[in-house]
Amino acid sequence: MKVDREKPAGPASARPSAALKGAVAAPGDKSISHRALMFGALAEGETIVRGLLEGDDVLRTAAAMRALGAEVERDAAPDGPRWRVAGAPWRAPARPLYFGNAGTGCRLVMGAVAGQGVAAAFDGDASLRSRPMDRILAPLALMGATATSRDGRLPVEIEGGRKLRAIDYALPKASAQIKSAVLLAALGAQGETAVREPEPCRDHTERMLAAFGAQIAVEADETGGRIIRLAGGQQLRAATMHVPGDPSSAAFLVAAALVTPGSEVVVREVLVNPLRTGFYETLREMGADISFENERMAAGEPVADIRARHSMLSGVEVPARRAPSMIDEYPILAVVAAFAAGETRMPGVGELRVKESDRIAAVEAGLAANGVETASGPDWLRVRGRDGAVPGGGRVETRHDHRIAMSFLVMGLAARAAVEIDDAAMIATSFPNFFALMRSLGAAFDVAATA
Ligand code: S3P
Image 1 (cartoon, protein in one colour):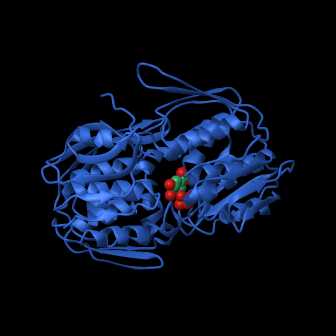
Image 2 (cartoon, helix red, strand yellow; image 1 turned 180 degrees about the vertical axis):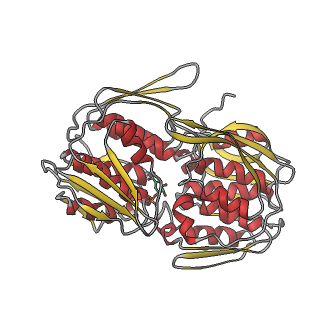
Image 3 (cartoon, rainbow, N blue to C red; image 1 turned 180 degrees about the horizontal axis):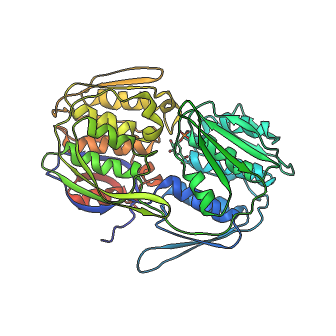
């Protein structure tokens, strides 16, 4: 099926819909797409990437790689676009690298830039400017990088001309972005870097380093965490890869099927790396009828087709240790929880406060506007389920946050009354064909303006 890229700007609303039916492919995984471009730009030779997510966030990374010296080209092909990345020694970009809304792109490239010893300035939109960058700059400083920032936030400038030294670094939190930034810096550093993560979090950087020919060692520690070791000075070699579907985007399709009566939806070729599937595990515990079918390996990652049917759901307590494997899915989980019977408790989610928005506050405000009760603390959220009867009828402020926007549009499909969001524009950062795919399943949306 051909789906068009739609660029809505301004408000959108979702109306109570009939059963959702059909099979669709989720867009390419955002985390893997960013990394594929970065590793291609660092590698010797030509990297070919298929299935790249062509969302705004990833396109910013593509532009940054060009500005740093790589050749990045997109060829149209009958079976979908093909991206070619020819790596080259990195050079200082003429202008600041602008990352828009993209935390992953910005933070990982900071690590890589420091490791390559080139000077670069970094900036982003209002949301990205409000997010902490000191969590990246602190380990980079330990490695010998010099940077200036606006109080630990963007704009940031990294000085060039420094050879970094390896460190042994215990991550202060289970964050794949911090881990990846340190590993990317370590590639250009002198000596062997060790990164210790308290709990395993998404490991695409480790997998991709190996796929690009680096020697990397990963071992479990005695408390359930991991230690990753990478020697500096290794030259990456170009690779060919197919990006699997994004489980964090598939989550909206699956959630829509679970809460909309009569639905049955299949999302094809979704990444099911166990460090990304906590949301699906939680849904099963809530009583969701979902199955992983046709499980197989693609580009070194496990993938499956996910089938989801409308289900009667019950509230659960989500173990705090599961948070890293579903960190981006809490907003949509909170919406699903609103349709469940009983309370859903989400402890250990303080990181949600520093995502594209304060997602605990944004979710609570959105649920309250639609007749759902919540409670929260600095690092926890509770949702009182309405057992299938969510009033809806509210207007939700998305706060420049794509996942808040999509979560509440899903709510509107199955609530008693339509749900409106103030701005649908940010959806294009991670899921540019969201409206087209959802409509192909039968979702009823009113979108103000499309360009
Ligand atoms: C990402 C890591 C996560 C996640 C983000 C993507 C990545 O952030 O929220 O959307 O690709 O490494 P943290 O590492 O800050 O938890």
